[in-house]
Length: 267
Length: 238
Ligand code: HEM
Image (tube, rainbow over all chains, first blue to last red; front, side, top):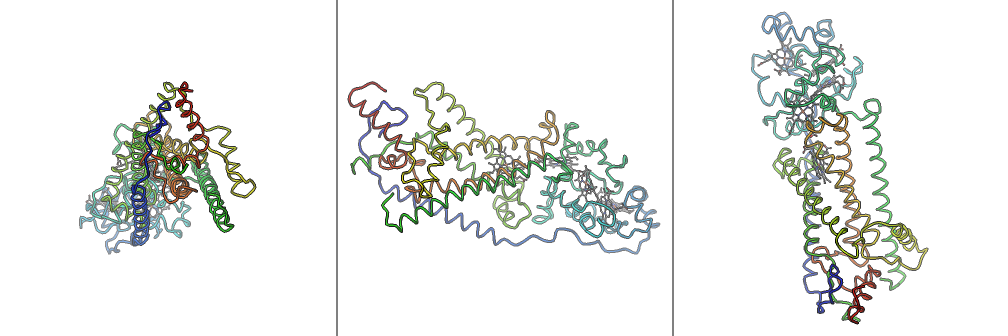
């Protein structure tokens, strides 16, 4: 065999292609067929369950009674955006059973409850009517689902609700009851407090880590010009590059069809 | 001529064939475990992740083959650099040049019927170089962004925080680009191009025929013939 890596050597004895070539073709065929089958099977997979949770059952317990039973949670909630709005008569804000049922039932300590928290907050924070009326962004829930935390939690909520996961849910960053606007210094996600929220789980994280936007992943021009441009480059670049490749292949196909039709003996 | 036409020549050394298999397996597995993460809310993605036992397990597999791919890439880099330094004449066949741009244009002109002759290629034609350099670029980009995503706490000790979401975007879109480029371009040059349909087996067997070489890489063929006649005539190596 002529060896191109040692060009000085003579050509080796003549060898003829054996059946081997056909075996390889068969293997290639098999691979392509199984790939097609896999894609077809995957495409038939059932769609996912609804994205947000339904409202918990309403309760006849009054605010005063809740305050008596759970003074700490009540105090935190009463001072939070939710509590202030609710106590002022805003029925769009969650009361004590806006996020869970009666805590005495132990529901809030179960594993499925944790995986369900984002969907519970999303019930209102992805609701166009609620957010528009309060001047809040509507992509709060969606942008959480795009983060590593959110995608993981959503996956396990859909496939294995009993899975014990430690990726951050809304209340890990925002707290469950002492929730304030991020611009409020009392908020656990205010810039000055944010790192403390991350370090609970990410030991050794430095200040730069807290600025990685892994609470809400946003790529619009306002949120981050750099991410916006990066995404734009790929959104334009990918169709251009793949389009150019497909165009070349199309030209080749057309050329081959034409030369065959013309009876040309070109190849 | 017909006898010589079927003469088998070595196109790829065993080490190169092993490299190709490593790259093929690791890249396929990375696509299979990475892309469903990108579309993790889609039904088809759940089906694929389920095959691995779930998202967590698919991530572990992703990280394993990432190590394989990075190791293979480093090995390749070392070999190429050593060969460029040690081997004479320098194995520069894969380096892109003005010639490739010209070949590309000539090839399009030929396919459009504006030219009657196909461009004559050397050991690697411009289409193969496009593929090779895309893979180099893609692997470098995927490795750097992937490592940043893998060690976010460590990376942000030195780098600004915004590099993490930036890496996520680049890793995620570059993966789509790489996957689509392989599905279109690689399928084309290795399975569909003129003369190779349905399958160019040389990267697995290492062998090609003289006839094929003459057809697809005429310049390389001519050099080989010139060299071998020189050797047969007892001439020097060049
Ligand atoms: C070369 C070394 C690579 C490394 C170190 C790497 C590492 C990672 C890491 C750390 C993640 C984040 C999720 C996780 O922790 O598992 C990820 C996600 C991902 N990887 Fe890779 N990867 C590599 C190569 C590739 C390749 C070759 C592809 C496919 C062409 C790929 C496709 C993806 C995709 C699509 C995602 C999901 C991104 C998203 O969330 O949008 N990766 N990879």
